[in-house]
Length: 297
Image (cartoon, rainbow, N blue to C red):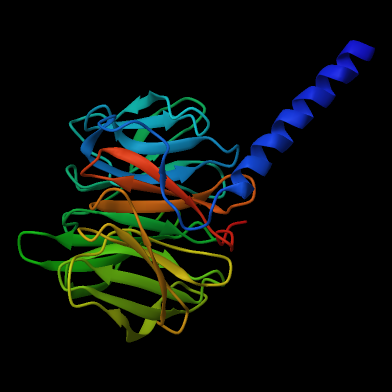
């Protein structure tokens, strides 16, 4: 009995040390989680499930979802996507199902995390190349849908068990998409046009009052995520920084990364204060610590 108590105490101390070590890291300073070249050039979409497991698409090669150890940086293939599909981001609904925009197959895929069965959740001939998703508390999916060849894009909403609803068309190359913490504002960026738009979102999931939130003169945009205070973190693809914007559209800071082609990010760890960033030029994951946790913490 005493040995059991001592073992629990030792494990508790190890856990506390790990958290303390993370907290002691300097803020807004990037360091590597994984080695370079562990992923394909299409590394994207980092995210955590409810149990704290970390997933990133296109581990080792296109068409996979990798499960990555956040302590060691090692990884393994969690699933291989069927029919030459390539995922672009990882998202989870309230029931724990994984959702992947499949830009090659023009689908939104769903993964049963217990059986690892992969199915087509949404498809329409009107999809261009579903790129990124965000999911609200009612399990409604909002999806960006660019046409890179034509420099245009669309926005969709996919209600649970229903066909996709086209919210807007005739946009630029829609890419990063995120809801504010209260889910009353939807942010969408256009990579090539370098604009970030915001919309009001009503209880039914309809959008209105499109307003220019921010615009930049150079480089591109990719994924975006909000912290608990409503600040939005935007990956500046090509510049190698994460721009942190206030809810009023003011630039708070830019966090420099080691790589230049940052494609997406997510808040993680027990306190929600570590940002995990995917880098397409280095084909790896970098992390940095922040003061305010992600909106889900």
